[in-house]
Length: 300
Image 1 (cartoon, rainbow, N blue to C red):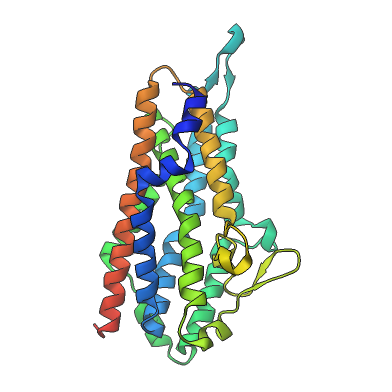
Image 2 (image 1 turned 45 degrees about the vertical axis):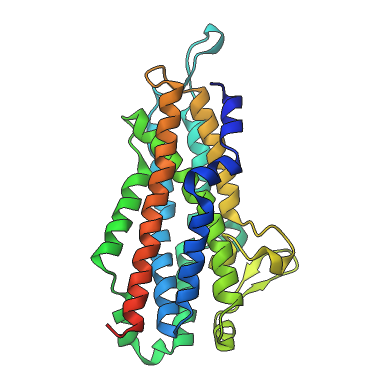
């Protein structure tokens, strides 16, 4: 199977089929809609989502580093020339995502984790937690089930420099992460910000876009990743879509320069396993958040 064949196999439609995107989007919408039941459930959803995503940039950095460490795995052996190490070319396509996560040039070089904290503080202000810090502290406590998903996310993202199969699987995990995150953020912007039943939410958690197309306000952590396209008359894509395109290019290069110890069939098996593991982890994540919000709504 050629690299060109991969371009055919790993189109948006193919990846959508593998990860079951239609059902996945329904789950995300359901979580968002349940989050709107109270100020507490709104806060819990956004706090959990921001918390696990706070590890994404570091996970991407570890994956790109492990690809770079694997200097003898991805080699250019064409034309009988001395082997050229191609690992850093692959790693750079992955690393582009962690650059944005740690110092986004579009947002004054602010780390995305800082933007998430600004958003959560604004949501807390809306909920009145500045006058009730005990309630915010109580809601910040995560279940062991939620934390186990976070651990799985961190473990599955980084791969291993000594294991080609683990690296390709992690690359598939990264592709799914960026592909589905693009859709998640678009849905969150639509369902939580635009459809929130309380106008005071939008008053506290401002969402804005300047003439140059840059986002501002506490909600910019969401919109810089992906936004409700219909409201802006565009496709809704943000940095996640850019990262997904780069991740696909990394996979194409990895296939082109893969070592002989892994066949093309095995390569695609590992890549798809990564896609499916991400879907498994994040479906579990969203279902756990639903359970946590239900417990909060019932006063547990």
